[in-house]
Length: 127
Image (cartoon, rainbow, N blue to C red; front, side, top):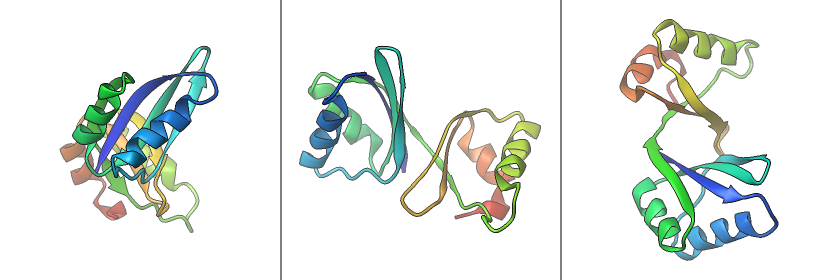
C-alpha cells in the first residue's frame, strides 16, 4: 500500500475532482485525510498503487507531492496509551513519522522515513 500526497486548492470542488479522477480510473481510497491551511490543503490517502494514482492525478494537472510506501499497524485499542507507545518506540530508534492516519479497517497508517526499520521495531502491532 502507498500514501499519495497531493496539494489541493482550498476551495469547494477540489476534493470532489480528486475523488472523481481516481474513481474513474478504478483506484480506491482505503483511508486518509485532508488538512487545510490557508489557500491550500494537504491530502494524504492510502491507495494500492501509488504510482498509478500519481500518474492519473498529474495527467489531470493536480499537484502531486509524491507517493511513498507505508507501514500498516494495528494498535491494541482496548489498552490506553498505545499511540504514545508505538510513537515512542519509533522515536527511540530515530525513525521520524511524517504522516499518520487510519484506514477503513481502523489500522494505523504511518508514513515514516525508514519503513523497513519501523516494521522491524513495531512487530507487536503487526496488522
